[in-house]
Image (spheres, rainbow, N blue to C red):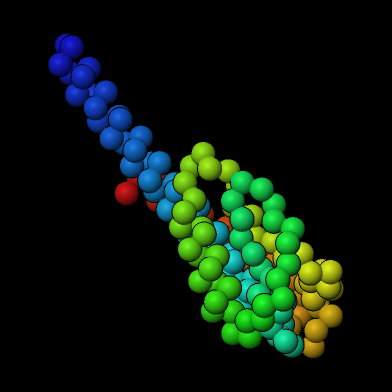
Length: 136
């Protein structure tokens, strides 16, 4: 009986680790999807609005940058590198843009993009989470 319990305990420990790894992957995929969506959905004039989508872990970033990123690649790559460092217990992943006019862009003030870039990012993240498999 003790042998069966020991084997069960080992199997449950392995399952727990598998679920943890898969949950971390799912959260990271969701964060990358949200970041990619919001960066690419941000209208471009100088590219500064795209470059100011900054990712932080554990606390909300309030800084801005003078950098520009017309196609969004550098911003997405920097965020992805930061997101890949995240693991369970390390805090919340924040994707923020502290430019004073970002809210106006999100409400559709640019002719390049209708409103809703942040809503689309949330939907992209939710899609990743809805399709995550913790026990695969």
